[in-house]
Image: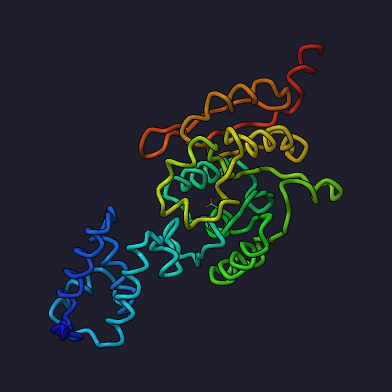
Amino acid sequence: MVTKAKRVSYSKTVAQALKWAVAYLKRRGITQPNLDAEVLLGHTLALDKSALYFQLNHPISPTELATFRQRIYRRSRHEPVAYIIGQKEFWSLDFSVGPEVLIPRPETEFLVEETLKIAQGMDKGNIKILDIGTGSGNIAIALARELGSCWILALDISFKALLLAINNIQKHEVEKRVQLIASDLFQPLKRAGASFHIILSNPPYIAEEDWEYLPPDVKEYEPRLALDGGAKGDRFLRRIIHEAPDYLLPDGFLLLELGHNQAEAVQSWVEKEPRLDWISIIPDYSSIPRVVVIKKLPIHRGAQRTL
Ligand code: GLN
């Protein structure tokens, strides 16, 4: 039987390519088809969004069209746009990202914002900060850019993540202020006797029971190592709260990003830790308590009582 060959047109304008891509992504259940198609086409043509809309009638070359189609197919299988284009904006800075690191989230900017507020009351030139689980290096680099002179030690257990963080450190020219080490939390700092004015982390905090509800974009593409917080999601939060006082200077601060239902538990562990004081909790854009601010007491609460 002879079937009639489908006529495929390879010459399209920007507007036609966008229309095709939006319809394709929509059919496959992608929630923001317009935005994703615009970003992917803009990236393919090296144009920003407004330039794209000024060129709606311009033809796209066959090579560009093939690249764009390929990217739209990848997105239709739920691969995050950030991994497809290899970058993500955080704190108005461009970060290289790949499947070896968590994609920086807008809510994590609250962690940067609160840290900057605290750092304002300190001698900036002298501030020592520890970033636990740095991933792409987004938090450490944003802080280093804002604070100017400071010293930030950024650690991660994943070598692959650290290799990517090095790229970002160089790209944003903060090599003198941000140093990286491969480490499972505080382990190598013990012998060095290191102590910090500020310790912060956006640790893996997804609980086992929440895993199945994660969107495929996250569950199937982002590194489990950066997300999985153990059975109750509290494995790292607990360890950090328990161990951080050994590495904080008196009056130093601990700032942590939390999952959607972890604030109460975290508060109770802090209250049981005699060297720490609960200061505040900051809600994110969806009013979810997201960032906790904890202070290291100059003297133990227990010790104070006996004076
Ligand atoms: N520090 C990075 C971020 O906040 C990575 C965090 C992680 O891997 N859990 O985006």
